Image (cartoon, rainbow, N blue to C red; front, side, top):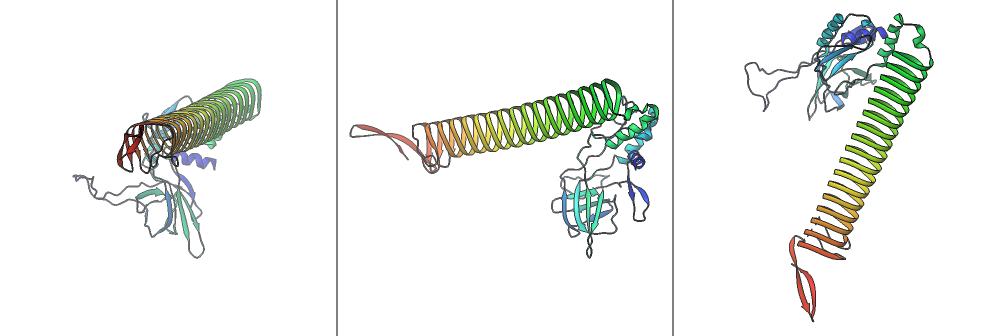
Length: 496
């Protein structure tokens, strides 16, 4: 099986055992989109109408249900083959953005650079045309459909072009097919774990057998390290492949391991299931669970992160617990931190003492202090809020300073804003240039001091303390103040 995988990788094809129980190589056919008249399509001498070129077409009456992505897997524009010493890389297009990477394929072991260049060029010509939309379709079974076929199906929204990468047939009296293809818009830079294991086998031919034993040394320095368990005080290597790593300090270009426990990790790329360290410095980090006191990373992809300090450009995680974070972009389901500083933050739930962000998008925000240019949230409980634009359904804050607030309910001790649009306001002091509210009164809005240039109330107006405004409109009609003297006493009343 390992040999077949290596062969298929170099030929840009898939291995498949067909209905005759014969192993065959399956190459994906070319998909050609049809050319039909359109408003933005102008006549030309070399332009002719054409139909779709696919193996089969699924019409709405053919399938039961369908689910597809709104993107297409981008075409591969380069092939990169890494040499045996991992110092050089052979590639066809140096300006490519979506390369197909081959590393540690034992069939290329000790092959000259010129031959590797030929392999990369030939392989690119076989796979550079492939594009498709990932989808999953349940339809009435069609025995003519084979794995590897191309197809197009139409729904009321668009035409979707894809391949049959997985086919599952089920049913007794009525046979049904599940046609499925998966993939990301851009290829991942992660290398196959199988290839790493194959590289170990190839390297054993010219290396001692000690590479596969358990290491227990004071210090290690090598170009490559392959082991099941590594325990050392200091590890310095170009690449490290292990199931379990325990060390005081690890310095490597690339680190692949299931479990890592170390005081300090310095690497360019780190791939692991579980990482526990006091300090992590890396360009890219991919892990399911991270526990660290300090992290300095360009990109972090993890399910669960617990750290004292995180400094990174982009952070993608389901759950984050940290003392301090300095990130350009944060994408997470749940964030609990003492301090967060970021340009953009997208989260379902945020709990922090101090939050500084240019843009904040969250369902729930609980913080002592928030400083942001734009805030969009469903529920926010903040002691001190400084924002430029705010869109909040329910806002509870001690002090609100903002240029514009759009909210259903605002509860604050002090509100200072230029434009205030709210259904209900409860505040001690409201200072604003323009105030738009459904009803201003004791039942809806309670304000001890109300200062604004323009005030618009739909149902009524009531203020317990001082009211200062230049323009008043109640129920859509303009109102004004007049002084009336009765029995020597002057009263200020509001009249239409």
